[in-house]
Image (tube, rainbow, N blue to C red; front, top):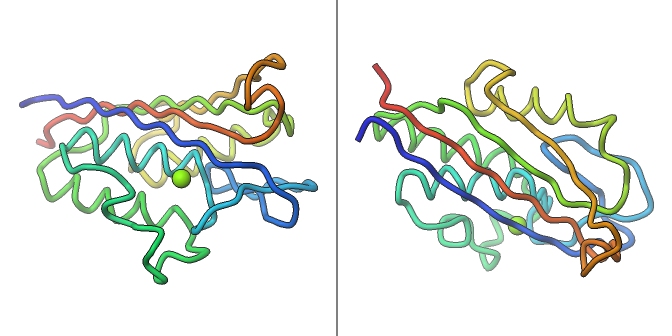
Length: 160
Ligand code: MG
């Protein structure tokens, strides 16, 4: 197949006393995301999109919560390791598009750094790695700022 597409979704609860790390960027504030690793929902969604594109299951299967090796682990490692598999299968990333769903904090000041991180992890130019954010407009768990979610879509192409 010349192209493969993958989608990823992740959501974590916002809780006091945790760091908030999104797209590999630490964002100062009173609350962070609960989780076994660093709970970076953006990089988790991205990892799932990559795994989906190569038909390799999901992040829970490759990096289970039950495994102490992944406790407080930086989620960039999950993307890096998954990219090794993507390349081994003969593919490279054509582009990726990520959406963060968060009522708070305001993410606009951090999106460019997230984008640079994502581009570096995926081995693409910055214009092939888009990171955007939208609010929940007061609706549902996201709108009540109970958690932060992220979606990712990646397109892989056969490496020459
Ligand atoms: Mg997760």
